[in-house]
Length: 468
Image 1 (spheres, rainbow, N blue to C red):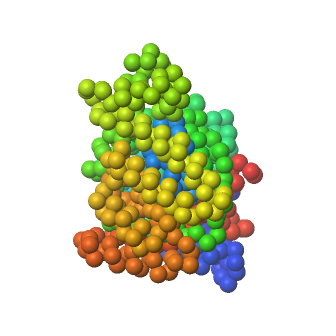
Image 2: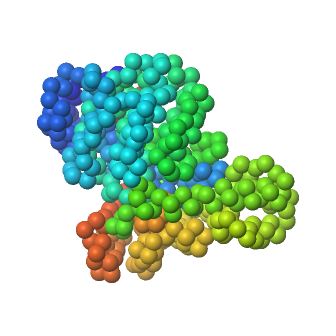
Image 3: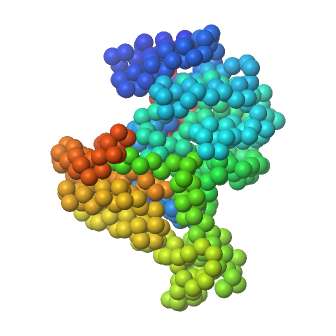
């Protein structure tokens, strides 16, 4: 249940010196309390919520989720902190602590027309979808949100999805939507909710919750599954179309994740949007092309891969290569899917179980090369980071996420992490000095999905909704 801002403040005071709330959480909450009072006077007695929405790392599974494949992912300790309070005037207001996102305000309405190419497109699209799907089963109140981000913008760590999910969490929790008939009739478990949130982003409908235009990207639900349901200390293996959690596997002690944001933003609101959508479109075009020459009605690359291997022999990929028109490289698009879904992911799971870091690292680097060769989404900065990571002693490294900029994951022995990180950063910035202002290098580890603060401390949103 939501509480008022005064009670959140009392909880923070009581947590001083205790282990129920990490110092970083407490610092963020106190800063956002101050911002909220300044931006939204008179909100102390309103219903409120404080929480954290993480970014995610796609360890394996490059552009496989919307193609019916699998993804090996985790949430991380960087993302969006937010403090939200309900209001009675039906407005959604959002104010960031820093200056990256300008303040916005808009009515909580089903007829919103989001501004394409502006950051407001994401929260406005989510609010519009929620108004359309839930206004009939609940009286919806507006929400005033103060937030801060520890996630670099355009970093490929799913910041856009996390921003939309922050908006959803604040609105849904303060409106009691998990108790609404339309919610529990259609969203029966955590993965249902993850797929719905992905549909809000890509515009598709989900069960009885009708879709709309979305934000303009054609992605899947990998990001949403990780951000919502991840558990600390483990990697999650998801399958898609339909979504399922196939396995959770502990991240080995003695292995360290180091992430580098290259400083070149991979923002889907800007010039990378069409490039990102081309990767997705090539997957759909490959399926359509295969259906034409095979007389089938398959829907995903997973089905194409299964059918082609059994029914078509070894020449079917060459048939896809000979498209002659439309999107190029359709055979290569399937080759990347086969490598990622059928070879790299199973072998990586085995390497984790056996705690074989060299084998895991080689697979990570092979995934990078396959993305570069077949998806064409690896920016020069990311490739330079990959090569230097391996030269400096990383077991392996790979760009991840949508591509065309963004970030890269390197895996190193924990004993080497302290020296590796500054050396990696120094080598990169010496070669790309123009990226110094925005590039970011940090150590991370698999963390939990979206959390809200209650009297017990931070608790996963899915546990509050589905296990209460």
